[in-house]
Length: 165
Image (tube, rainbow, N blue to C red):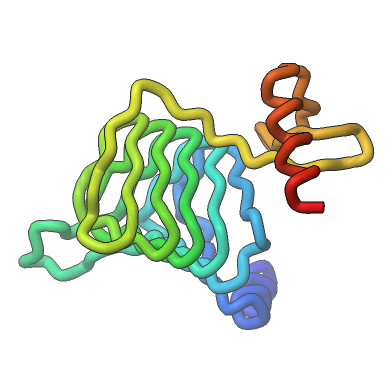
């Protein structure tokens, strides 16, 4: 019965999220699961944010250098339309830009952008996407909304809001 429900969910959302995927902790699907494909062999760290139309897929070509499934570290942000293919390791606190294709390893605190992959090593990255709620400005961490208290960040968020108005 559970498999029947899963198949119906996958059909309705045009997604593939198998039970056998190894997920270390909460994942935040920023725009829902529509169009997201995650291979059953993939491993995903905790507190990852995944946007729409993302593929985290296995390379099952036995003679390929990239044979296998991706492993994503903790606190990764995967942009809309990004593709992570094969036995690649994405480090902790990484960002994969919209429509980027990743077929090689990324060290911790790095960014991959579309086009010819360019890996940019950073000292530290904090992947927080802010939203304004009735409680104030905040972000999602461990599947819970956290209200921001840093006054410098709050001023920057308020300035951005004023510029848009």
